[in-house]
Amino acid sequence: MVKYFLLFVMFTGIVACNDSGLSGDYVPKGPSLIEKFVFHSGGKVDVVSLATVVGSYTFQGTRVEVTMNGQALVFEMEASGCLNGGLAGTFCKA
Image 1: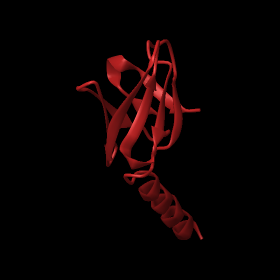
Image 2 (image 1 turned 90 degrees about the horizontal axis):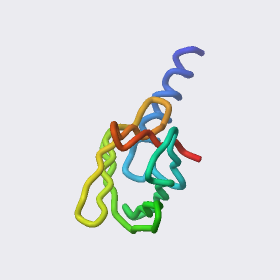
Image 3 (image 1 turned 180 degrees about the vertical axis):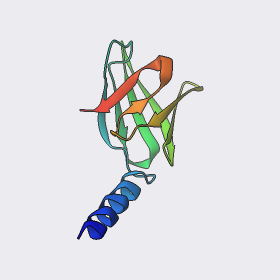
C-alpha cells in the first residue's frame, strides 16, 4: 500500500512540473514591488505591479523563466509549489 502511495505522489509531482503546470495567480510571500503573476496557457503571463505588463514564461523541470520587456526573471519551483526568485522574492499560488 505504501508503495502505491509513493508512486502516486511521484506521478502527481511529475505532472505538476510539466510545461503546462503553471496557471492562475501567484502572490508574494513577503514585501515585493510585484503585486502578482497571473500565468495563462500558451506560455503567457501578466506581471501586475503599478501597471500590468504582458510577458511570456518557460517552465522546465523546476526552473521558471519569466520574460517581460526584454528582461528575464528566473525562479526555482520549491517543493511547496512556490516560486523562489531570490532577490525578486518568493511567490505562492493564491
